Length: 319
Image 1 (tube, one colour):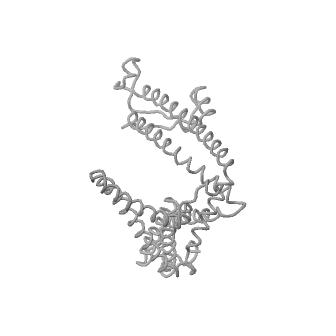
Image 2 (spheres, rainbow, N blue to C red; image 1 turned 180 degrees about the vertical axis):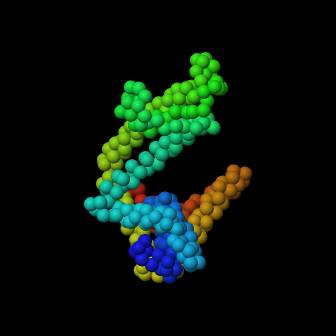
Image 3 (cartoon, rainbow, N blue to C red; image 1 turned 120 degrees about the vertical axis):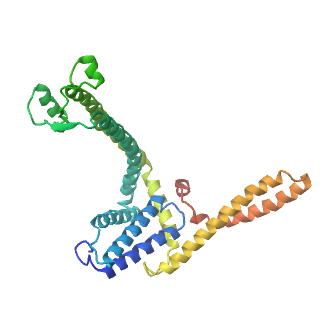
């Protein structure tokens, strides 16, 4: 709606910002059952930051930043895709797609590495060189072969270096720098084309096929796990819809962070207590161990009561 209408309405963007902030707080306040991941949290925080910037610009009479508006559209539909997981028919397919996207993230790291590698190579080879595009110019059968295999976009020539011989290939072959640059550029391009479009693309296809086969065998259990974790999150939601639930969600978020800090301090005190117990007398040590065991038993009893608010595993679903 905001893409076509009311793009300059500060009231509309203020309501949208309030809703997105309420959604982010509700995500942060939800129990850690595995339904919301750190990617979901970063998604919601990015939406809030984009809406803050848009509201600031619109409030001061400026146009809506189109790039931020487009980015929030993608992130919003990503949140919708997260909610479709609980659908009995579409949920398994969404899980398979999200798992494959996780593999793509690992692939992108390798892709960025190779792209940076060849960028540095091209930058070192063609610095201060003017290139001339000759992809559509007929010169020999080699041009036709390259056009048929890779396309004309890789056929370039360098100019303005006929009299110099500063390249190593120029020293050993007697060629001018312009010809040596064309030869070395062709070699680097050949390696880049063989590595990125051929090897890495086939690696991506193999990874996707492996992920599809792995997820398809466990998709039913994974769907039940996601559904159970979603139910546990829904049990803790306030009865009011967003953004009217913002005060309750803020309280839940504060309580969650407070409980997390208490657990961290308790775990830290346990570590210090274990170091101190090693230096005590045997009788005192036995008494301290008894007290510690009583504390641990009480803590385990409390943890058993709260176990349904923890991350849901596939083993729990199968049991």
